Each structure stands twice: as structure tokens, then as C-alpha cells.
Image 1 (spheres, rainbow, N blue to C red):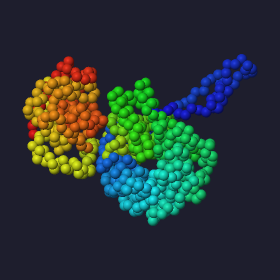
Image 2: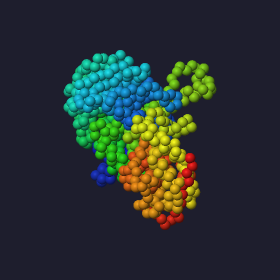
Image 3: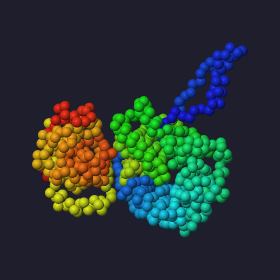
Image 4: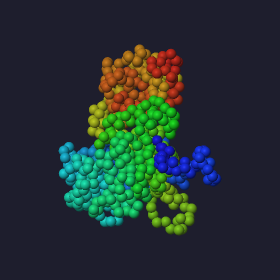
Length: 638
């Protein structure tokens, strides 16, 4: 939620009253010109706001996603046009930004444990990651990468468990200084990224609690760090390791707002400097607020409240950026509460959330339960929301702006009207995002990307060992199972695509029942508007039906069988491994049903035009209206 700005100081309000005068009879003499007129405060405007927004993604849905083998926790865009993604299983992938989209470059297994922190150098030439010990005890390791040559050049072994990592050298300095903090002490160790792994310096007096956050500002050669106690410090990464000697920078911490986190009993979880280095933005927990500080003065200039109570209040009052359906809002709110309960502490997924600046330094992007907000920090308004149609909870962000192909352009080339040159100069502004408990990272563009270039969700990873085992064991059975079916109802036909390679037993149960006429004259006995319709119970009560084997059978969950889109068919159950004959068809995306109900249909034809008409306002067990008196009578073709 973007506030209307910070409240003016009391002294300023009082001075306005004095200048404006009052109606007291004690005033004697000529009045001051304009004394009776109220001062009009003009709303702030950002020059070239439309241009800045035109150079940012605006799509309501992501246009492409790529896979890791486990949940992706960090995405980092370097100044050398490389995207680096990491996952909780210790894998790292390098991607090169192309004129349109990205291209895979290289894959590294950096650790057997989760990567806890990453950092790219200010010039984009170096990248580092740190992870816990593979044995689970004290200790850990760091990996150093030469980004441009996509090569791992060093492995640092630690006798302590690392917490945060940050490159702290100036661009073009020739040195590669890497700061690493300790999870069990306030020490910060400085290493040579190309060295032998022995610390060059050990800083013990900057903080009094373990440091979980460090960010370097090349403009002022300054590091902003934060510890678990809520204290924020400035320090220069060279002797004497104190406050930088920068003209205009604060000298006394009491004159800043850096004690704000301690006062509010919150801690910053991310720090991002604006492109000009004059401001830095941070997210704070558990307050769920977004703060913007002035780098030189240390003063708090903006605060945006994204707490759940504030979001609920706006939803009820209808003052939110956009109003969600009550069921969708409740589902998203449940995810947020789950994040608060289990993922807001050290090492939690919510700690990976961050904010990013656009190239102008006036637009701030950060993920919320409603989508990715683009906030104009000058006018204090939400300019747009990216990805608001997605059911994903986005967390970590990285932004690319500009044209990836940088080559020398002659005057003749600039003056020509060659369409090929114009195409190469076109911008491809892209926002990259991770999502909660998702093994993919997502790309948002300008909204006019050509979807015909391939699948939206790219399967760039091999199937797991378990998935391959299922395929081998069920090979003969799957050959005999059909891949298509048709449900005939009094509202029309629903044509289905069956995928026995994902859920062979569930498909076999459905197909065999249909061939045996088990579903003939069976109604959709349960209809919930904007959720699903349920059928497959010959008794019509919702409590009957059994599998072809008699009784119940086990679930068949798969990463490929998700409920991320409407009109998916899944087995209805009363709990784990209680599948029978009943099934349901969703009318909206229902990702909260993943790993709770076996989905065995990936495509629908005809359901989109029929299912909404069969949706009534009854909540459960609806048998009165004609819409649900459908005859599924499924006929099966191979």
C-alpha cells in the first residue's frame, strides 16, 4: 500500500498557521497580503513518468518460465547482461540475455546444501554464493564465479557457517574483496575472491549481533549492513572500517532514522540501492513494510505498509489497487499466513523477497500478495501491478532494462531506416521473479510477446528418478490405456485429453468405469460457483462410489499434474489415498489443491463453454436446478 507521503513535521505546521494568521480580535494593524488565503499544496508530479512506465514490464501474466530441480530462491541480473539463478538444492545456472528472452549458458552444482546468500559485483564481472556445510555441522563454503567467462574460479572453505555475502570493491579497482558474515557471531570477514581462502581482515566491532544483510554502494564506497537485532550500520570497506568520509553524509546516528527498525521491533531483510546511489530501499519483517531511505542523510523518506491487516482493510473497504474475488483473496491470504508462520524467520522463503529500482531511480518494484507492485516514489502512488492474474506468490525479483545487443553504431547506421537495425535497437525490458515453493523462475515482458514461440512453461529438466521408475513399471499398462475421452452431458460434450504417463492408475480407473457404463445417468451432485463441479457418484449424494478394484486407491501426485489453470479434472477424495469413482472439474485455477488431489487430465475442449453455465450459486449438494442433472455417460476412444 503506497502512503500519501510522510507527515510534515509539527514545526512546519505551526509556521504555516503563523503565516496564515487567525481570526483573533487581538490582531491590530494592517493585515499581511494573502493572510486570509489558504496555502494550496500542489500534488507532486514526476516528469517523464509515462516514458519510465513504457520502459517497464506491464503484463498481467508471465510469458515464459524455466525450471530448476528444486525451489528457486534467488534471481540476479548483472550489468554484463547475465542472469544467474539458484535453487535451494545448491544448483546454480547462468543465462545470457538475448535480443528476445534468455539463453541457457552453464549449470553448476555449487553445494549439497541450500545456497543462503548470493552477490554480484558492482561491475557485473564477479558473482559469489555461500552455503552451509554439507555435513550439517559448523562450517560452510563459498563459490566464486567469473561471470563474463561463465567459469567457477575459486572455492572458499569456511570454519564457520556463513550467513550473508557481498562484494565490497570499487569497479575498476583491480581487487576482488568479498565480505562474508557469520551466523553465530557478529564478525564480518573480508576475503580476496581470487585468493587462498584465508581472511584478509576480521571486523568484530561494527555489529553486536549476527549480520544477515550487506549491500555495497559503489558511488560512495560504502556498505550498509543489518543484524538480527535490528541495527543498521554504514561502513567503508577499507581502513579504518568506519563511516565513509563523504561530503554531506550524516555524522551522528542520532540525527538519522536508522534506529527505526529497533524502535518498531522489526529487521530489514533486503537492501537495494537506486541506480544513482542516493536512496536505498528495504523490506522489513515482521511489519511487512517497505522503506526508502536517503543514503546521505539516513532519513526515512517513504514507508509503504503491506501488512496483512492493511491489505484486509483495503479489500473490505474497496480501496485496494484492484479488488479480488472473496474466494481468491481468502486463498492468497492463507498463503501469506503460512509464509508468516513458517517462512519469515532466518532461512525462510519470505526472507528472500526484495525490492528493485528501475533505471530512472523513481519507480520501485516489489512483490505482494496482489502481484508485483510498481510504486512511483515521487508521487507516492501505485503506477501498476504486474502479474496480478497469476495465482503464484512472487518473492525475489531481478529487472533487466534496455537492449541486450550493444554494438558500435555509425552515423550512417543511425540515420538509415533499415528495419534490421531498428529491431536490434529495440528494448526488451524483462522482469524475472521467483515464487513460493516453485521450482521455476518466471519472466514478465511488455505484454505483447509472441506466445507462438513455444510453451509458456519450458520443461528444461529431465524427469526425476521416481518419475522414470513409474514410467518403467507401468509401461505395459500405459500402452493399453487411451489418451482421449468424451463426457456426454445434457449441456453438451466435454472432450478430454488423458495422460496415463502422469497418473496411470487414476486414468485406468476413470476409463474402465466409463467403459462399463458406471457413469451413465450420474449427475454433477456438487456445484460451487467459481470453484468446481463434482460428479461420479452413482448415488448422487456425494458419499458413494468406489474404484474398479473395490474400495479406494492411492494418490498419484506429479510436478506435471498441477491445478494452475481452470478446467482441470481431478479425483475427488476424503483425504490422502482415498480415491474412488468421484471426480471434479475446476472452473478457476486452484493451486492449493496440488498434492491433495490427483490430476490426470491436462487439456479440455468444450468444458470452457459448458462449465460456467452449469455453475449456480448453491454451495453444495445441488440437485434442484436442471444444470447439474447432467448425464456424464463417458465414451472412451484411444
